[in-house]
Image (tube, rainbow, N blue to C red; front, top):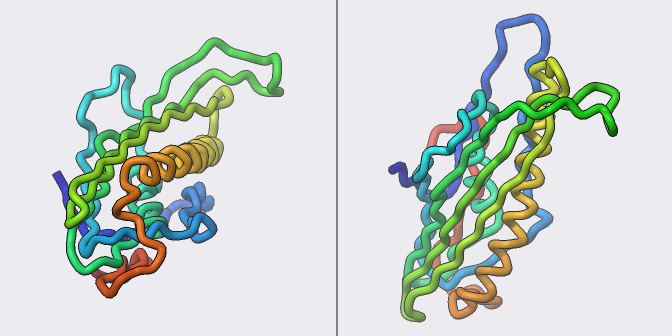
Length: 204
């Protein structure tokens, strides 16, 4: 189990081939605003995969779902209290890939594959208010055209990440306001604030 402070270091990979590498999904969510929590410490816990998916895990895409969640949480949540702790726990975050019967009804090229993303989150807080827990799950799928190129696969994955983060933001925002309302503060008290994610190539 890997535990780190919120704030992620993005590593840029430079392709040695002449053709440009597919662009990873853009990760920036300032328009969503902050949820201020009356706790002093906020941590990110990536448990990887609690239960092995039935279908084979798809090839590695960048960024990983866990990295996308790390940045989302860094930009969405902030600790502004004088005591107490909160933890954003990724219980499951993975992508599966499977073939599907060719469908030409809506597409110029048959859609013969499908990527499905799975995310399971727990967010808990402990402090003078007691204990509170919010959970959220998100599942999204996108199709792939026949003989998809690396660029088309990355674009499909980008759409998958974007859709999953939109769903997760809606579900987790509701869960936090339903089950953790005692920890939400509109007038931040003196305490540590969550730093923004680190810039590329900057060591923690």
